[in-house]
View 1 (cartoon, rainbow, N blue to C red):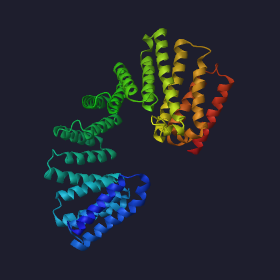
View 2 (cartoon, rainbow, N blue to C red):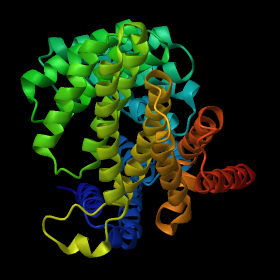
View 3 (tube, helix red, strand yellow):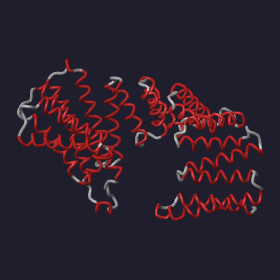
View 4 (spheres, rainbow, N blue to C red):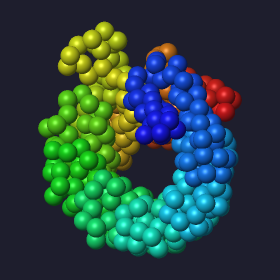
Length: 438
């Protein structure tokens, strides 16, 4: 191996080692890796000449380094120089040019320069199709990236067609059950939902779930998540019986494979509670008081269980982190728990007002809603959760607080206690403060 190749291999290996190491060491070693890539580039220029393909390879490696460091402008210039050298050394439709264009397209994509990314992907796709063939997975990969930038430019129909074609290529290559193919089907269903084409999205979501059921089974959280996404779409399409059955199965599966206090269990509980209310509201004329009572009891139980789990996550102490079987929450868990807790508090309020109208409950109506308002305000009072509700999930928090205020003001005027009135006053002040901060 010549000296340049040794230098190039060493710099690539060093960067891979750094990116696989712990964070505290990465930052110190990145400068060393950068010097190695730069030295490899200098060695190539001195050993082979300024316009040699070896130089293009070194430029591309250094560009990849900067792209992964998110220094996109530096990476862009290096990619462009590498492509220019490759086009001079070979032909403009050489596969090495196509590979470099693919990388440059990603760099533009990450900078939100979507028109430039589209041009690069289109050129790369043409080259890959000619050299590799239109049935090659790499060709499908570039096609998928092109679809994404087209969608980001509002060209959704073209994007959907390309995504479907990239999925077909993977399936014909025997990769229909691969994570890559599942990811593309998920992306396509999400795009269809954005376009309000729920029926088409349902078809793809059923396909995703069927694939995961066969390849992973119901003990996989990936399968459960796919079923949950389908359940939400079915709910939006008013296919409520099947939606409820799937939500129930998701809840049972999560309880089986996760600790009882995991936030994903709380997610399933609150989704199921909301669906029960939805079913009740959609068939109001045909539901008698006994059925309504059972519906409200189930929805309230699920909501209360969700609240209990999420509050447990938010109140978990740091000392629990030292336990082997700890369920102590990470920041990401706490963010998710806060969002789910807010949804559960909304459901509690909606259950109370639905019960008041349908069952004519009297003096006890205010107690659950009062508790929900108090819990919502407590999230703002406590330093540990205040930063979450004022920054990360601020809009969710304001929506929940406003909903609870409106429920009390519009429907429980006569049942307001002095304590509840004080809570409402504090809630209004919180809303004012958050609006002023905005």
